[in-house]
Length: 438
Image (cartoon, rainbow, N blue to C red):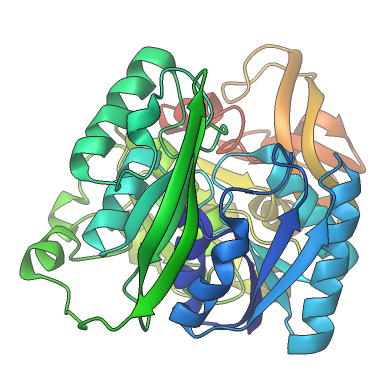
């Protein structure tokens, strides 16, 4: 699939690009150059230097101007994506969003309106683990801007190192900052990476700093040749399995959950956004997890896990609905099952419900109307929606939230089988933990 990457030159968009390149063709980078240094949507430090990065990566760059006015800048982003689609034939957009619902939801809406895929491969990742992964995979990252207490001028132009990561981890614990800068605390610029054909050397730079706000401004830089290095033996030992699967000898442990990937193909880019965040959330709570694509699930896999979660998919992805025969086991399995978004639709359809159009993107308050072990007592909860479809309520399932013709949550009347239309890995992670201890 040809993809365009929303590109700022910072670590997140660069790393998202690398992940996209694993199984797809990155046809172009798309950079919005904002006149407003305090843009709500776009990275601004050294944004005019992305051209040399694109050359270092060997990928075409499309730059697009924006005045950076709140909400209006979305029209500029939409126009840039249209231009990229016409010029490079892209079918999808990749972003480096980690936790910002404000940014991710707006890009999702633009992509939906243009019938494009949208991939957020860093979504909900553990930020400290991610920073260390950048080092292990030989990315050379510098801090290009700081915008919050307690960052002082010593951070400007500093290289991201293990020592800096430890400092960020301490600041996260003490001040609740986002260590990757997702809350706007800091910005970065990438000078080299494992897929860069050449590295970038800074020749001249300046900086300004006052009241915990500062920028490291690159005034001149050049491309230089670099030696290609293989991954070290140490890194290979630390990352023997990029999926983080649980070893077979640990499978007997109580509480091991099988995450069923419903994405259109095995190991797709969507897995980073809709499956891995659920695994992160559960493993942070001490729960063991494994991942299998729905086409690979066998009776022995269901038998060797204590609980099953059917995960969500991208907005354009409803291929799973064409293969409902692969989910006949849902009716017979007496173990706890949770369907999230697309997973909920599968469960509902297996029991006789209809998958119907129902579009929603973003945060919303919903009303829990019935008490259950999964959602607790009736009340309002904030949830994150990202779906094009819902499912009607079939016989044998009880409504926990929403309407019969557009269910937000249900449970089976006799089996510990649940479905929720929203994404608890983004908001309301406590739901995942409650399910793990059913």
